[in-house]
Structure formats: structure tokens, C-alpha cells
Amino acid sequence: MTSVLLVVSAASKWTLKDGSAHPTGFWASEFIHPHQVFTQAGYDITIATPGGVAPTVDEASLSLPMNNNDQSAIQNQRDYLTGLADTLASPARLEDVDPDGFDTVYVSGGHGPMEDLADNPTIGAIYAALTPNPHKVVAAVCHGVGALLPAKKADGSWIFAGRRLTGFTDEEETALGFGDRAPWLLESRLREAGALFDGGPAFAPQIVVDGNLVTGQNPASAQPSAEAVVQLLTARTV
Image (cartoon, rainbow, N blue to C red; front, side, top):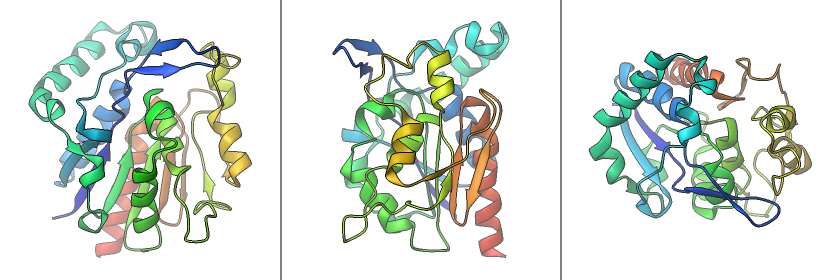
């Protein structure tokens, strides 16, 4: 059975430039939609967080403005998370994960990853272990793409330098009111690290596939990015 490591931030706050703590967590749809896609594909899913800490959903992701004022969509997401309450209450410890046991790793988004995954050596080592294998797929969406940053080669260089990818753009961060409040901006940091950043229109679906690397730009990109992972893994087993 195909196995997927679905990584979720354990952070409940994001430390802003002025040192204040902004409440955050994982973005509901950026976890739910990939989980649904991987479940429908029949994958064996392991949910993991740094330290095995139960993740916190960012309530902003379940607000009316972030869901086209559709209360039923919000309720569907809450119901889905309730159905996974026991699993989310006791996720695997990211530090205990053996990357060799997985066919793919997918990091969900939300501002949480900016706090505990973008400089996390464990997720970096997992990406470093899987990326060189053409039969594996490495993926992330939105701010979860920040988890690619700590992935290093033996010589200390960044594994994804020169690779095409996307993630939450500086334009989108500014639109949310964090452009001048964030300690750093994801798009800018990725470009500085050597990524060939390919951003699309703000808040519209944007997926970039470069070899075995799949990235999605924002919440609207969560489902199609997960579907792209499934397509790649299916092609590798045919």
C-alpha cells in the first residue's frame, strides 16, 4: 500500500517581527483536502507533528470571510476534523519518523509552519532523504512550503536550489495584513535560497510540478496539489 507522511504544524502562535504572538495553527482546508484526496486514493496516512504535539486549527481558516461566507462549508470542515479528533489528538512524533517507510511526504500549510517547520532540521532531513529518489514524491502547500528550507545536501547547500516551485506569495501575505509584520516573507526567502519561484494570481489555484517535487501556492491549491501527488505516484507504479 502506498504510504504518505502528512506533516502538520504543532505551533499555535506565530512570532511576528515586533515579538508579539499571533494566534495560528494549521489551515483547515490545507489539511482536510489533501487528507481526503489521499484517503480516496487508498493510501496509508500517517499524520505527524513536531514533538507529536496535537495540532491546533487556525480559527481564521474556519471564518466566514475565508470561506466565501459559506457556513455549510465551514461546518463540513469542522465535522471532518471532529471525525479525526482521536487521530489528531495523538499524532506521530516527526522526530521518530523513518522516511524510508514512506512513498511521499506532504506538508500542510497555515502560518504555523513559519514557526516550527521552516527551520526544523527533522523535516529537512526527511526531505533530504526522499528527494533524491525518483520513485518518491515530496510536496507541500502554501506556508508549508517553508518546510523545504531546512533540507540540505551533505555539503550544506540547499537541496531545492534551482528547482521550480511555488508557495504563499509576498503579495498574498501583504493582502492578509502581514506584509510588514512578518519576521520574513516566504516567497522572498525561497527566492533568496535559490528557488525558481513561480507564483500565480493571488489566492487562485497554482500548482508547480518539477520532477518529483509538487508545491501549491495557497488554500485553493491544496486539493489539486494533492491530486498531482497521486498522479505522480500512480505513474511511477504503472
